[in-house]
Image 1: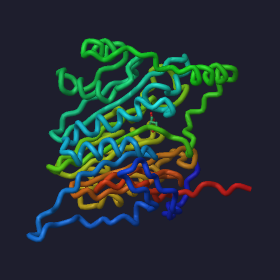
Image 2 (image 1 turned 90 degrees about the horizontal axis):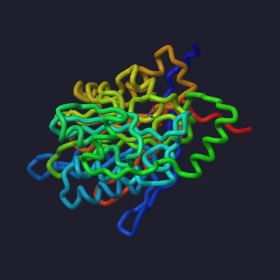
Image 3 (image 1 turned 180 degrees about the vertical axis):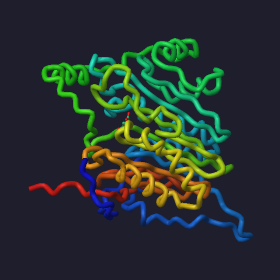
Image 4 (image 1 turned 90 degrees about the vertical axis):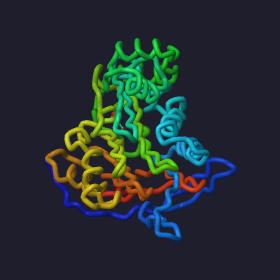
Length: 339
Ligand code: ASP
């Protein structure tokens, strides 16, 4: 197995995202963000409601951020925020319109974690669009944490979720094409991920998180990645902060990445330092990190945030004070130069 030296590279500044009349687009790197926790004249910390998410999903953070500004709690806001992408037909890795498994079925994974430490998850669910909301129902309406497959689907109908065909014509056609070679490479294209993981901080200083995905395209039937696994794809400790992952789930699971980041923040690391250390663990592992992408985002109780990825190209959205920033992440490996 190849190992590369762990060199931190600096991301180039990217294109800002403006998502509506009330939002200001802006070009920044995560490292350029103001990261000083605001304090009142009396020295008390001021809480600024904040929503962050993986990748470039400005509508999702705008939705969650607007709700937080109106006084919504962190859990309600995070579920509504990720629901934007679950309903987005153009997002081929989340909700309706996602890439199917190798048998042609779209199967979804999601989890949610509340400020009080409760959590819920669903795995390999068919025919249900809003699986993060379903994970919340598992958390709130059952004595369990995880429901899978048909059991999760049956529970969804009992909770009033509609049955919907998740496979679009376009994705069916792509799958028919793929079947001709069935060239299965469980390697994530480093430039194209769409899993949405989101963290929200509300006016009371409470943090919640959600993660929702269809996982790897043309995955083996029954494969589950990190996204619905508490501690791997998502972890919250309301005393400390939260973290969420995207990328090759198998490698995130091996290092229990999101839990690790929260524990590192507990030991005093900033969200940025904690994300970098979690990526460093993967880079140091025997797995060949040149062949897959992993990225983390994190937020602490003061609304300070961090993000880091193996490969160049990852960015996160951050909505704070009515501004929706697209923040390019720092990374270990730059993209190969094109000839
Ligand atoms: N983490 C997801 C999985 O492995 C995929 C991704 O984030 O792109 O299922």
